[in-house]
Image (tube, rainbow, N blue to C red; front, side, top):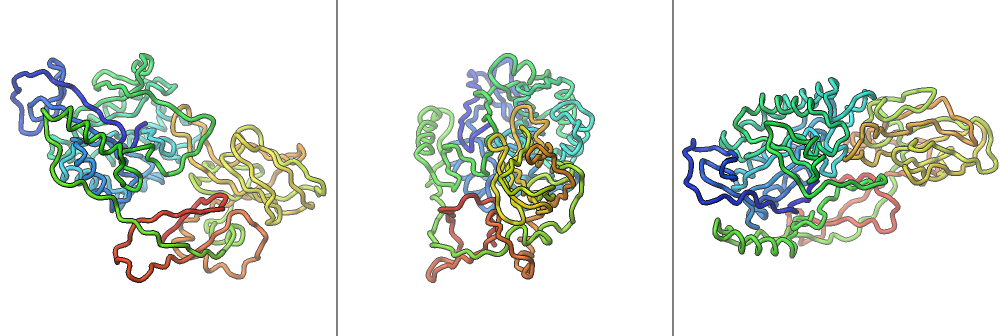
Length: 500
């Protein structure tokens, strides 16, 4: 776990010794003298964390320059596997996903890189960076020497690691060290064969000269299970996790020196002052002004109009059709790894008086909007609300629109499947004959399909609904778009936001 440019690391205060002979570009650990050696010379650095995957590419340079101007020598960044391979064998290294360009930019700015390459990263990221499609095989044991898991890891690393090899320090790039796995000592498997496999894999693709390391909690049991001979062992300030289930938004700055908007905070200047005081004998803070905060503008209110409810737009939201099953299937079983699935069945009899609709403990993941014939009945939610009262006549259409709100990223999460994990009952009677519609909302919105669904039956479904509006830029505003914030006062929940 880490904070966005949040923790400074001052590593290895070397003793004053004569420099060792070395080739032009090398980075190594001198165990005899307890220091790092860069190009044969004793070396220390101060680093900060930045998550390229959480920052638009347009702002990479802005954030990196601000870190450099704070006095940092290096950055460390996580590589979320599922950011680059959302579907098996389909890789994305373009645009905001172009990690190679990010690393090259850091090099141009003069920042070294500590690369935390995974395959697991935690980082308060969905499933710790592991792709959810791994769970399509229910018996898989993640972060272990399970052959199915290792096969997927080998395929991913066989694509990713060759991309970063030219960016290793000895090859002219900025990467001085590479972390293998993350806080593995805190994971229940304690599988040394898994770590040995990763070590061989990283050495095969990156060579024997790069410094590889592990990071674990400060307790002896963590280090015992998370370290392995051949990798440099480090400890952090202690891992943690939120329980019970607490979904996190994509927002992530946690009181960082740079806010999520890239603004300089008091903490930023305090850190810069401290570095000036304690680091002056080794280096100077870069001269020149710190880049200013990003320009922002209040564009005013946006009037929204209803387009369609989810039920009205079901034909275009579920272009691949439906799946039928006697009992509910999970997202993972129907290969829907995020977003929404609509579960549909019929009431088996008439319920004039409120009847209790119930899921079992851990049966709903993570949130379900319940409607009968398009009329909202209530919401079921993981660990909170597992039963609601509904009414309806025999044969009425019962819909549960289930939302995945993110997968557990730390701890034992092999079974964090999504959707309806157990049967649903009404007055103790198990409901059967389900039809499931995996929703492809991104495609429908991006292709403008929602505006073409007029003619569908309008229903009184007041829950999930699509709205659209236009942002009017007042005259006299500079042509360059400026940052702004969106506030949904009075709204219950906003799940998707698209800006074109």
